[in-house]
Picture 1 (cartoon, helix red, strand yellow):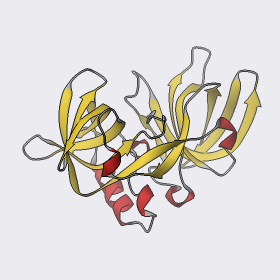
Picture 2 (picture 1 turned 90 degrees about the vertical axis):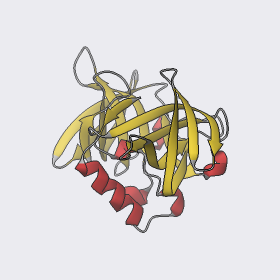
Picture 3 (picture 1 turned 135 degrees about the vertical axis):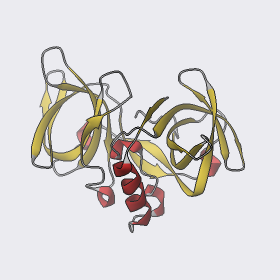
Picture 4 (picture 1 turned 90 degrees about the horizontal axis):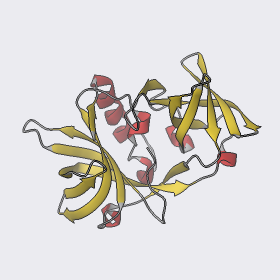
Length: 214
């Protein structure tokens, strides 16, 4: 669990909540957000849901309470394939610099078409030390010996990212608070309120054996 966030993120959350998107997709994962100094990414497993309070055992071994904001949305992740990535798709790719140059993907989220363009850019990310998150449009995807390489574009810039075989690739699916059962794996971009308590406008939860890789 790591702190981060900016006014940009708050504006983006507001935009996501007011866009005419299908309800299942209004839970915008933080892959579509610039990481900033007031946001905390909670990654872990649900211990319990009591009213609006989700108790989560984080990947760091701590147990934290996250209160769901009024109107909070829940989305699931659905399994996708590297072969599903097509030119024109809008994707969020967490990656790390490679020793031989360029970036190597840690995970890929294929956004639904209605969410194309949200959070466009490349930002620091806390999935692993020195990782980044790039939300961009696929210009082309080429199959290689050790996987695939995609060229993505954002704000007039271009970036090549290698996607090794076995890299988690997911998209978004519907979910509700009923899916926040004990043991369910979640990714929660939360913010601290005036009293320092964690509050979340959205939750991404694993379903059918697929866990949020972001």
